[in-house]
Length: 176
Image 1 (cartoon, one colour):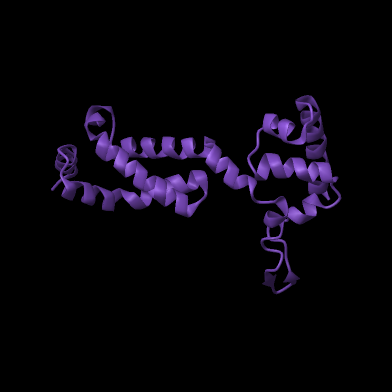
Image 2 (cartoon, rainbow, N blue to C red; image 1 turned 90 degrees about the vertical axis):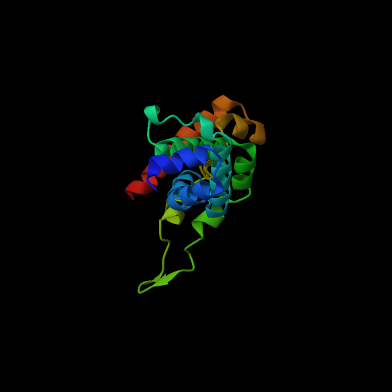
């Protein structure tokens, strides 16, 4: 059966056609979602949701507007972006302290002994606690500047100024 016929059967709610299309595309769709949200388990859940959505909305697919895979891909991409913007996703990221990222590979061993694989620890060395906290909240936990302002009970202008200062300090550490 060619792809066009398979899609027509799928649109008629044929479960066998759905299964074949799922087997053809699920791995790629899950991969695209995971590239965006960087969480394998959640990516697989979202992938399932995407296939349920395309099953429910199969009559919305119009071959004259693009390929079937592109249609699914756009639905998956939008689902992944919605997930990134969701409060649940942001709250999950807020539970991880910056030191957990810095120390992930600290205990790894190579021929030269202890290593810090991506060099984060050396970049953070010498930074003030305020800078480490700002970087943690903004870059590792996904807070917005406005959320950091509320969290730290500090005016947003002060947050922005501190952030510029912290980034300047980080740049100095990168050059060392």
